[in-house]
Image (cartoon, rainbow, N blue to C red; front, side):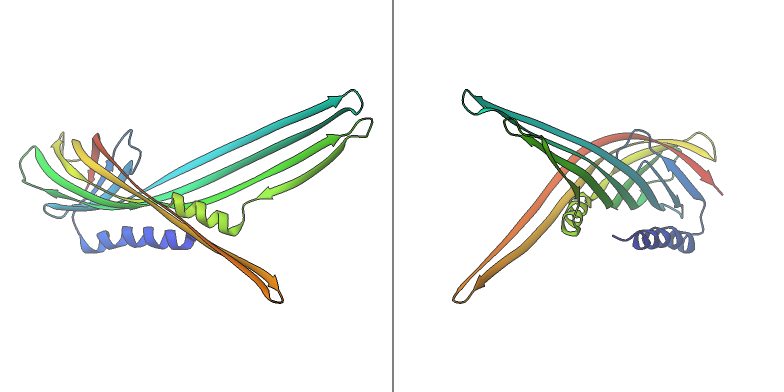
Length: 236
């Protein structure tokens, strides 16, 4: 997804709660969590809608080397080498929209929560493949070629990394002061993975024609429970 679309979504998610709710702003930090480590929202009665944005970066380096030699009494020795080096990176933007609903207004505040998150990926990769060989008594030869992700490969990887999910559960919040509170929560996080790729190829001349079509689909669901502690700061 273009960066402009991501910025528009985040801006809307930030502005709408601010316009619709006039209550105090709540900034929440959840240490040691893999999805949505921080968020802010606006408290209005028992409801606190919130928005979060996480950033995840991934880097990968790959190196492959293979050497083959063969020799005989009559043919002598020949050899060949193949080396492949590549590096890739991915940046994942993960905006989150959610809401907390207070079950009561006692000093120890129990609540329910639910949220939706979606990741948007930007990937790149490049590499070099080098082949070297030599026959008996011959001069070593070398050929190198550059490798880069094509548009279709890039879109497929970004689609695979573009997971979405739901997070819901319950918790309890205890105010230490009017501006600071600590909360514990337990919930279930569902992550959905899906991607598909299809293409075709055809050729022929005269009366002979051929055509191939193929389609690949990937889908999966990951569910995991989680228990977390949150630190919340309230600004009037």
